[in-house]
Image 1 (cartoon, rainbow, N blue to C red):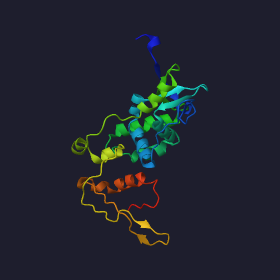
Image 2: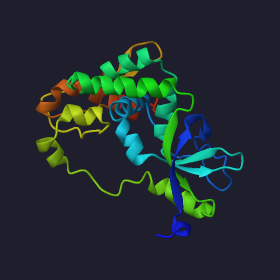
Image 3: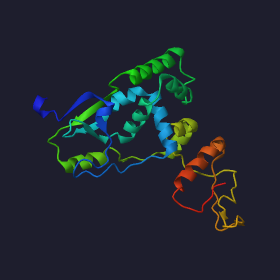
Length: 237
């Protein structure tokens, strides 16, 4: 491949030189994706546990006129790394201890993770691997890249996940598992409260989950609460 045919470069860029997409690039709307607190906490833990993925995937950025870069792909990872950059090595060690699978690692693997992140947060640059989009790229192409980077064209085969994967691990990795049949009966799942504090049963929705997921009841309840957070007057019990 000729040098002039290369459209992007893979380089290390200091975290502070990368801006989240907030609509500051003319013609490009702000990043349309958001993340709830519970999922953001899982993302931070996943990034801490798998720093290799940051190196393998990197971020997709575009150079701005102010010599900084705007994140086109990887805005959530940028947020996670920004949060990690504020932690001390001791705080990172505590967070790692809360990560699923960390206790099962060998002492050498745990030490490697602690050292990797300890060195990163103490470094001046806090470099992040990035693919730089060429300045010749049109704004329409950049808009397409921003959406395509977050598009999920495939779909999960739920029966394979249920039979061949660990449900607890999948939840820790941010997968929202479907809610299916279970012995759990939540007839009073939703209760509307009158202004005077008395109960008004109103309309009810019953949610059931599979028996093998009964230990994840609280996690599933949190998912439902997150999904309904924009609707006032709904109570999850």
